Length: 262
Image 1 (cartoon, rainbow, N blue to C red):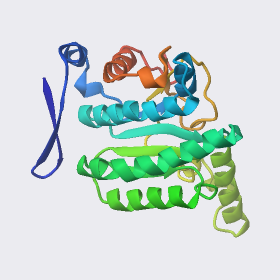
Image 2: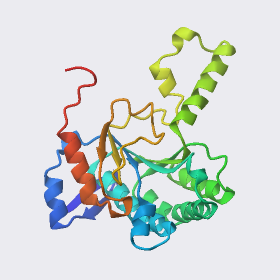
Image 3: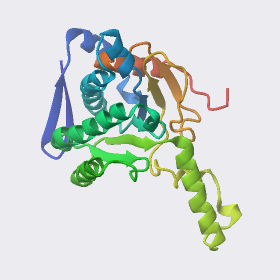
Image 4: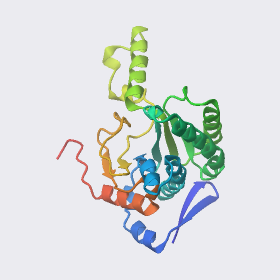
C-alpha cells in the first residue's frame, strides 16, 4: 500500500507500507489524527548494553527510528512532532557520551536536512542553544534557515531543553515587561504565558509517547502537557517502529478526553 501526501503544489511524496503495517493503518481514523505528537526517546543506552555494545551505538542506531517516525508522522498528517533530543540535564552524562551525542547531532543535521527539506518539513529548535558546540549550533541554524519557508509538518527538536528552565525564562521576560510598564498584572493569563514559551504558536501535544517502559515526564513540556494523553511502551527507542507509532495513535483515538469534565 502506498500513502500519498502533497507537500507543495505539484509535488507528492509516498511511503510504502508492509501488509502488517497496512492492516494497522486501516484501523487509523484519519479524521482524528492528533495535530501534535511528542516523544521522549528513551532506552538507547540500555538497548546497546543488552547487545554488549557501547551506549553510543544505541544513539547511532536510534537515528533510523527517528527518520521512520518523522516520515510516518508527516505521511499520516500530523502537523507538529516534538522529539526530546537532548535535555538540559543530559550534560551530566559522561563527557565522552556527551561529545559523541553532539557529533551525532551535527552529522545528522548535515546528512538529513536536504531530505527533510524535500519532504516539506519545517525545523524548529526548542531549548537554549548557547551551550552547544559551535559546529552543532551552526548546522542547526543552517537547517532551520533552509526549511524556514516550508509549509509541511513542523519538526521540533528539543535540544538543551528543560521545561522548568523554559518556564523560568518566560517568567523573567514577563516580569521584565511588567517592570517596564509594558504589561499589567491583569494582562498575565495562560495565553500570555504560552506565547512566551519555546512552543509559542503551537497547539499543545495531544499525545506523548515514551519508550523503554518509564513512567515519568523528565522535565519535558510540563506546561504544555496539562491534558496530554500519555502512552508508554516497553520497547527501547531503537526498537520502536512505524507500526508501534500507529498503534499508539490508535490507542489514543480510543480514549475519551474529558478535560476535567464528564
